[in-house]
Amino acid sequence: MHFSCLIFLFLLVSCNYTSKVSTDLEQEPYFDMPSLVKQQLAHLDSLQPSVEVTAIIDGRQEVETMQKDSADWAETLKLFSDANINRPVLQGRYQVKDSTDQSTEWNIRIYQARQPSDVEIPYLAVYYENSLDHVRKIETVFHEKNVLYYTERRMEMQLKNTEVGALLTEYQSTGTQKMFFRDSVNYSLSAKVRYSLPSG
Image (cartoon, rainbow, N blue to C red; front, side, top):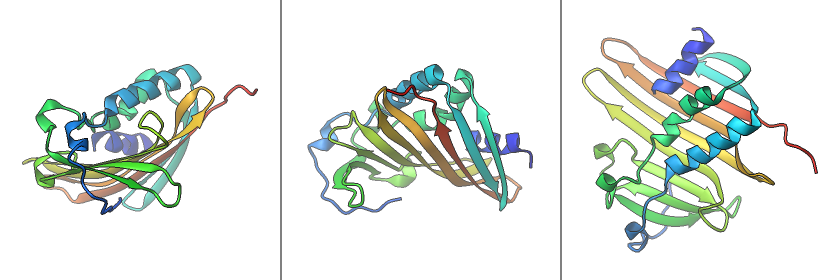
């Protein structure tokens, strides 16, 4: 399958913690993914990094290095922006827990759907340092089912702190897509974003 087809499939289409649920946290607005994506799109547009993309579909791998324009980045990160649980219709439908990642000592804010089968985003975890303004990693799960297809994907983005702010460094998506009257397709896509930041 041509590499562009693998990217198109990505555009179409963790962890278990046991910390106590906080009822106070459930009264706060949920994490705002669209705002984080909007911030990253502004950085990507101004810094114009290259990105190395590795795509695997049913065991076949292709690797390509490219530079994306602003429209390409907006389309690429749309899946993350769409992982928006901070909508009035979803208020109260998630248990909210705080935990700590032992390997990095980052804080983790975890949103777990009370009825996972009733929402498209059953799980979202935000890793951060000190406050949610300093996000280091996002993990989320998306699933959708209708009469024509079923899709499930697990997505992750990683960010690092720099002198110009938090920058996207990696993103991944793995999942399965089953179309009506067709076999299931398993895929994995990962990307490393490389910047040429000014020294000093």
